[in-house]
Length: 504
Image (cartoon, rainbow, N blue to C red; front, top):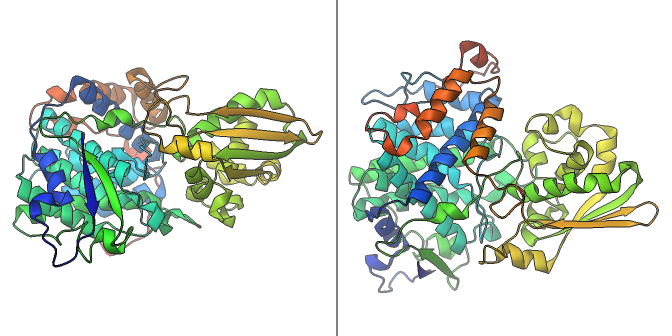
């Protein structure tokens, strides 16, 4: 890996195109390096993971609305791309397939994650890159190469450039990564990919209010929008249209005015020429449908439950954790909504006091029951919930930012004080499903997650067909990528809510 120093440049500065970060990323995307067997296998795992969480969300209102919008935009020229739940013969234009499938994947906050200087869900790269691959008749090998790039670029940007410090939403790293991945998929030249990256970044920068205060369904739509913008950016760049440049380093660019300002300096690691793209191996999926920094606390609550005994005897619970966890999903956020029993699912998903309370009471977590309005409003839950707070612990913050994977941690130390004055203390550094956790996810666990979430949604025979196809992804021939979706019965689709009419 080579570390690139990235900073704003004055308008009159001598700053050749070859040194732009967008060029460096485009060069990585255009590098024809082979994908390793280990990376290819993990990409297959993440395609399974995306399909699993999409199946569980298929008839929720935001997903239903996104699908309705996509179906109002049929492809008029080429083959189009598939939409989760619909027969593979039913196609829409690829940017709208990326939109519909992106919302389905993101709705439950239940797929993969990478946390470093910034947050990310790199599996959000899969819907746009797969949609373009289907539309253009590519095969499995090309898809694998494109996804390896998408994961690599997003994760490398997340390692080097913090967005949330400046209240910019993390999908600002997704637009460029998806554009780069599509560039690899289509074997585009460096110049075209460069322009697409610039356009994608320019159109996908937004504030973090989507994840603050009263969190709405836009949290699921935001990455789908970034994927859709990436598809459109590549299309325009292929037609010869350019982008604002230098997009990151310009005098009026992203760094100068949206991030750290003219004096800020960022270090972005990227693979050297000929170096394999392996970043996906540093990411991890979720066992529980909750914000990633809640994964270890859920497992910790499950572990502590028996030791505590009668939960009514709890006086206070303090979770000592990282700065990120404290200010994003903890009491350091200052959001009263995080203690509101009438809050939206999206808001509860970003409240570690609520999540820890429910996990203590129930001994686990379930993607629907744990967020049900009647569950959130239970008197005993509300009482316990309001006894829980978070504080930043510098050691947990240090471990959050550690570069050594054996040190890096997203957990907490729970100090439970009983009414008697007795304290019960325990801690957990990483979730059980983490590669260093008690029960790391491998192919078997990804398939089990798919089977669990697909139950009652996808017929068993269709589950078998999908799992057989996806595990053969590297061997799928050009034109066979329509196998990487799933179809559900009209009865299942009939469970979706009636959607309001819009413009389309």
